[in-house]
Image (cartoon, rainbow, N blue to C red):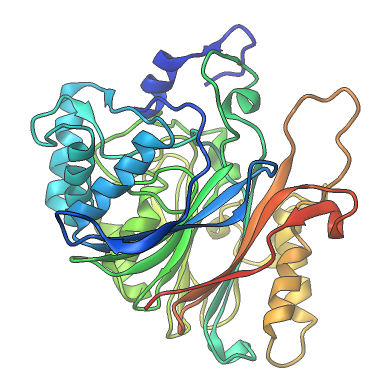
Length: 429
């Protein structure tokens, strides 16, 4: 999409880009953990951070049942709270996407069947697409992430430390276009989802976009952890699909790995064997497990070559440039603004090296804080939305848990000029 002031972001354009129509989200209400009437789904919801006066509302969902039941419930939330509509797409493309999921990703196919039921449809015969359900749109993330093998941590556990950096604007504001659709900022409704399906690995993950099949980062019950980051270096050469295809999109890949894999070796094999595409921006991924192994998975700008970079049992860093092209810190291009991908990688490497012996959890938090986006004053006359580190998460592969700190808004009186939730703790059973 070009940034054109003459372009209107209306419902038809939104449907064409994403296969959904989105309007303002509404605050959620906590619900008691109970079995749904008429089936065995167990569901609970709790608002754990943020509120009407904050940038972000964070909700923790817990679902236990069949994938079909889980998909139905997530679709009900997307439809009722966020006004997501099933969208019409090319029937051949829709059939190809359904067939791909049925052959290659049974868990997501079953969730899509449940999602169709929430819309009063039948997945196999409907001409509308409910295989992904985006809220508040989607766009390019940034981020800085480090995987620490247990050998290097004071806790003696394998940890992934992840900053999710992104704009605080709506999709219309980010693209610089007018909109006839009321919008909340793109990452203003964040879900921490804990799922215990009948098929596939139980997992704990964060998604602010695709409720049905997406994840930005998470951990599963086998101790596999994964995070998605944008590959800014390849963006200028990219050809995004701008909508669903037969295969897995950039936000579906993390969820697929959490559903399907227990170890980094299984994850490598799964990535080699699956069809994938990107709807908006090229991404790369860091995956680690409870053995201390990790790797970064990337593909070329032409999307015709794949690259695996192993962590070799040491702390492994990823920011927003292709690691396979710059395998050593000393090979990174020259300096620039502090927040560039190359400089964030240098800074992370320097801060980790300062810690003699095993690194503590507080030091791990501090390392990522050094490359978080500061609450700098907005330039006079600027109407561009600012970027912020919207959350910092530490995933524990051995405890199958997460500590996550969320951005709630700018506040000159708060530490570092930002209101934040403080670290909230979540555990898989």
